[in-house]
Figure (tube, helix red, strand yellow):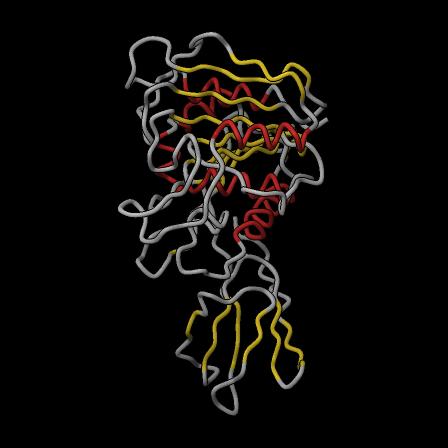
Length: 328
């Protein structure tokens, strides 16, 4: 699937400068001739003000990235099915996220439509998502990944039988930050997210227009995206980044957005989510009173780091938690 290629690129004159605006998930490029060579303006944000270096400059927007959609063998083209979008971590590809989650047989068993798009490639050749200020747009690229992902979802829903009340995102690390951004900016579209080792925005600049189900899974010994919050930086990342909330703070913020009350934390582990720790390893924090469409839970995986080895229980429990919570 590919999002519609209608960039709606416009140029207007303001105070002696050109102001460009566009739509979709493509990046702005410029050239001195219509035949190129074309330069990608990696830091261009929408709208973008430019002073042309030569008398005539040409601009275009790159075609949005395409993505493969997978559907189960039982798909009949008429019965609406849930849609799950998998978002990879920094430096990964979508297929790697699907492999880590062992998602293909699970999607077949649960009857899911699913896709695993790739993020933008940065100057080091590394795929990333322009998620939050804390992760992981190191060069300040102006790519609108939230707009891109929405357009992908809308394109799929316009061509396949999608249950519009069961559209979910599952993100790993940088992809988890991106899932939180989608929940903030496109709450009307997303029923729920599962964030694995990623955090929401710190502060109240991004708040959802309506409740979104939030499942947050995080290793308590994670030092890459610290469980207790703080900031990420060298040696794992090339620069010191803005601070980020901790795992508990992230779910508490979303409990506030959703209107949840009655936080309860289990006395001990009740789930076996990873192979790195023998036996039960995960403590659940939940809210006893949730509004329709706005359940919030934290699964704290004790003693594990950023990329543990998931058990056979991990992905089924995650997906079943989401599927049991549609939009109202």
